[in-house]
Image 1 (cartoon, helix red, strand yellow):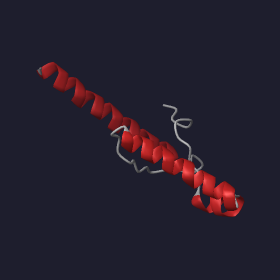
Image 2 (cartoon, one colour):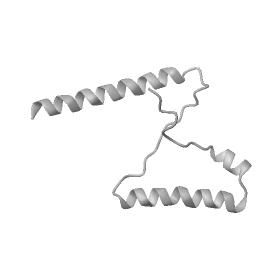
Image 3 (cartoon, helix red, strand yellow):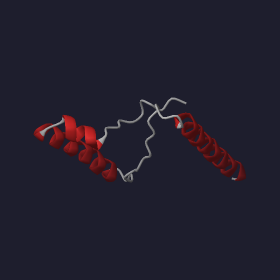
Image 4 (tube, one colour):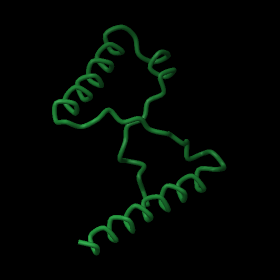
Length: 83
């Protein structure tokens, strides 16, 4: 499964090191706007776990997530069958 282009991840340290003043403020404003719009649509504020694909355990973490998704799909399928 290729999820690598689904999210934008920027390290806070990189923002601090590479963006100054109005650029950093604009990024903060835009991220906040997305959160406010999601909230306006009745969607919750999500929290994510990020794994750098360069880490030796990245493939293991990805497989665990895939198994979790497969399990969720099976649970949803069994609910549909019981109706």
